[in-house]
Amino acid sequence: ATRYLWSAHKGSVNEDDFILRLPYTLQADIIAQTRAKHIRDCQFFDFCSSDIVKALALCLRPLVFSSGDIVCHAGDMGQEMFFLSKGSVEVVSPDRTTCFATLVEGSFFGETSVRVDCDLRVTPSAVSHL
Image (cartoon, rainbow, N blue to C red; front, side, top):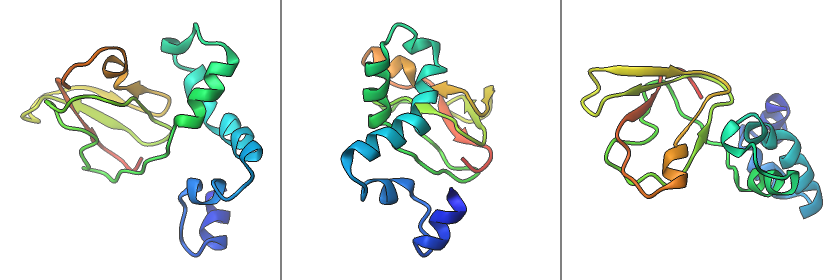
């Protein structure tokens, strides 16, 4: 799919640029098929009906980070949740001297900020291309 998007859209691989040009019902079906798996695979959303999972999938937006990019900073007010579809992220201390975890494809983070208003206590940083 990415190769097609690259060649057909002159280098743009932002799938939303392509999908959002389609009729809404087709957009919803494609997004539900491609993004809902992240929500279904996350135990945080186990209690959700398939309609809620589909609605949440429509809210997901793909982001791309390069190795070394800071995904978000410790101390920032968390407002979003992230699902890793490829690459890896290190969860590090605010001073970046301690790595608490390395998250890989299929992992998620930021779920605490979705449930409660709180500042981030760690700094997720991309280790590889996401």
